[in-house]
Length: 181
Image (cartoon, rainbow, N blue to C red; front, side):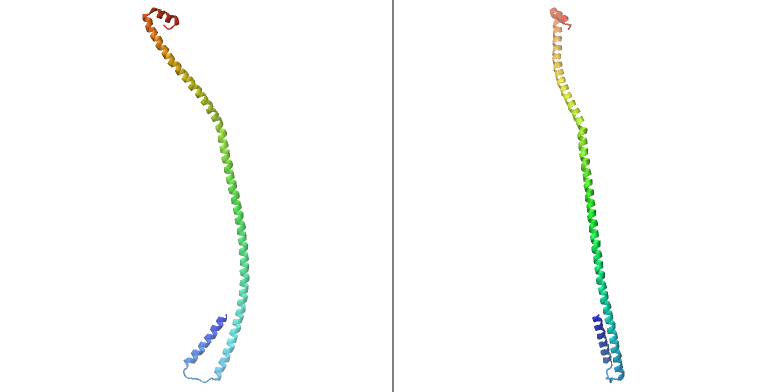
């Protein structure tokens, strides 16, 4: 505000200086000039009073702005604390949600593993049983193969004896008695 007043004073100074410089010839100071200066002085006092009242209003507005700024700051702080609380609530909710989700997944995996184990136990027992039976069958088949080999040798012996029985009647008689001829 003081800058405005100073600029007005300078403006008036320069305007009077310009008016004085415009007239090259010197004019005597008249009574009209004196009256004009008095009116100008009165106007300047009125302008100063108006400027002072404007300054007072500006000071009042500054105080109101400070109060408004403090209220806005308080409201922003309140909103910030509310946002922090809600963010904490949301984080808590998310942690509980993830806890429940992963806990459920753990229970599901445990159930699947337990179910597989209980479902596979009878199959494993049957498989062991069939394995034992297979071993038994393999042993029996090996015995049968060895017997077949022995039987083949016996067949060859019987064929040889039959051929010999054609030439020898004693062997033929023995083979008939045994039921092989």
